Image 1 (cartoon, rainbow, N blue to C red):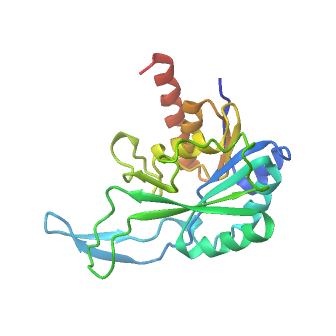
Image 2 (cartoon, rainbow, N blue to C red; image 1 turned 90 degrees about the horizontal axis):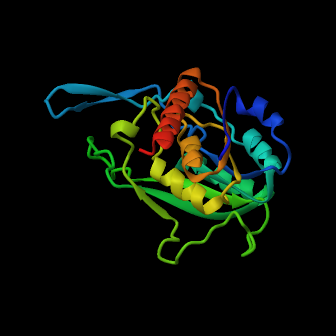
Length: 243
């Protein structure tokens, strides 16, 4: 049975409690640095004007990735890797840091099956989000944490709709459980340890619970920490009832 640890606090303070070279995968969804203190208006289907906020929260301003990347490298074992969600604004920073300090591998793409409409009609619909994969050391066929599937399945493109329905929480940047399951299944051996320094609504923890991977993660916002705890408890009850 997997061990799941949800820890409330700042990852840069809590990382020190993780031993060197003990983690198989750091799967992180850090701030994107894309928030703006502005709103735009659009017409809803009912014909009423609606404000759309581009401000995700104070945590999405002036984020510096380097401190958490340094700690991530420290805790990874020799077969370990980092997969980080990133915006276009920060992609170059991650790519440069990994090139200097680890082994950058590949860009991964989430293709959204239901992208948000482009109401202002001034650009393309945003139908993708980026992940970047880097390894602590060069990858080899002997790596137990790189679980290659069939050629047909092993593409760097992951398809899933924007989170909705019963899966949806109040977290503004929640990622699909489907993608978390695919990433963890491919990049962490069964019984291995996954770390998520910014676990948000707890999607990574739930995926680890379902896949028999151990998990340790940190969340600095108490509201999201409580959301993740509640989601995980529901998952455990459903597993016990086999539903």
